Length: 118
Length: 123
Image 1 (cartoon, each protein chain N blue to C red):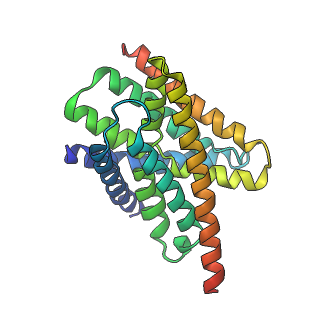
Image 2 (image 1 turned 180 degrees about the vertical axis):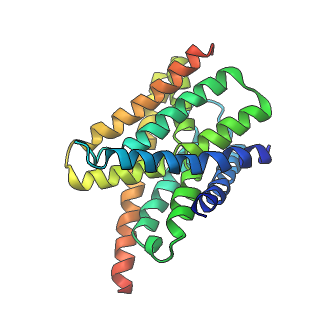
């Protein structure tokens, strides 16, 4: 089981970095460039993938994809740090961003899970 | 290469998270192992990002992107909250979400405050 986590995480972590770098580059000059688009994308996408995995996979495959890949692809620490940064530049609005991203991810998980037959 | 450093860190952080999951399995209600990794991970990113992140070039990819990114998880959090809601355990779901968000955000602030203070002491 440990090996499944290793393999999943070894793919998930660098992929998260690549996606976040690409998102940062594309949104650098956009209107709401301080919004945490990177964490939103990896966390929502990772949560949706988790929903599909839970509906369809078992055992080692599930561990590899869920604990390994999704666990490493998504991040709470990165999200928390961006929230901290937002808080220092926007007194009130940051809470809505936090709640909005959280709700989006829970919804992404649930929807994907149901669509995959869970 | 940076991606390899991130992968190694990510694996280490994920294994630690997995170990905690095995030690404190989620049997319904609050997912303590996930809450723990997310709050501790948030405290650590606050601390690292305000202190040693610029000390060496590998600290950011290895510790922050890799270890802490792998240690913490949003998918497990979303899965647990979503499952609690789906099974009608609304108070537990809301309580778990509140604990995680408040805990994580207080932790990152505390880590950053501590790190800033530590840097002030050593300069």
